[in-house]
Length: 457
Image (cartoon, rainbow, N blue to C red):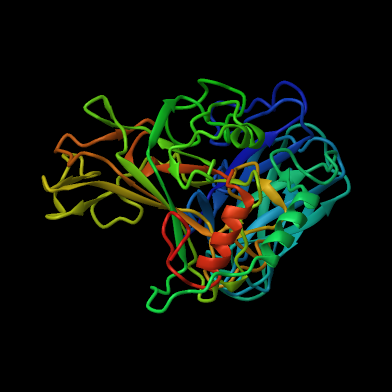
């Protein structure tokens, strides 16, 4: 059995969210001047029966409660849902589709029914979809909330990543969900559709790919996606691409600053990662290649990113050992490769002729509606079926950072500004010139042709 946890993110009008008892594992964070929206991460239960926790397969998806069966339940304490009516959502995955439901009750597992979600087949235990239910009224103030599983067949039938509750007072867009500018997007798409693809020369490697090659720019304890407008609110980040990136960065500021460390110069995007340290000294990358490609069997439906699109891959809060062989680890590139491990086992020691490298892969399917989401991940998803469908039907380029460092390492290992090796993560804030990005997607990805940084074959 594998089960995943519930995380809480609270965005509530006013200065502070509900204060939870320190002993509870539930975490609420707040942002001022927004309508009430609460996201309850499934692993944050205060009590449970029949529930286990596991990491989601999608990078940055955190944890989920998994393989839930009839009669399993979770209890969440001190949950203040704010004003009614509400739209409730649950991010679920199910290889079987049940039949079954997820019920939310207040007070006790048999208390008043708050909402009922029907479980649908999503194709796999880690292929996520969002289901919704309406809550016309509910008790006010902090409540004890129970999630109860009801199935009509034996066996496990659903995994749950999170629940969310939205009062709709932002006109259908919850706090943190940044809606797309439909007029601008329609214009960008029309221009992209009208582009004539370049002729692919004979002998070209038929791999859907182009790239931007970027050098290190600067470091700041800023994060304009997670902590916009709050300089110094983050751990130290190493920035690549747009030289003006800081806590106050916006789409407009990126486009207005033509200075970039990337080739091509028409990529004014911002890219950043946590800073790497060796024996307390920052080790900055000697180069990062940002690959734009496709992992879909048929990439022909891929479209470029809209202006101002942003997303995060990885989990800065993940602090788990990463022994040799564990996915998403650092590795050695070059002659001789890895010749050992650090004393704690979490980092490779490379041959003198090799150096430390990491590849970070971002989601490749998009909901087609939002430039960003409250957790900076829910508007995107990884495909597990070879197509983009469901809540994330739009195929976007599969972005990956390949980051190299001018060091072979030693038995003392390294650390990241975010903690252990498992906390490696990356941020992408799109500010490509629309024409330059669109032509590369049309020529290189749609036609499955390998291109260079100049966008040529």
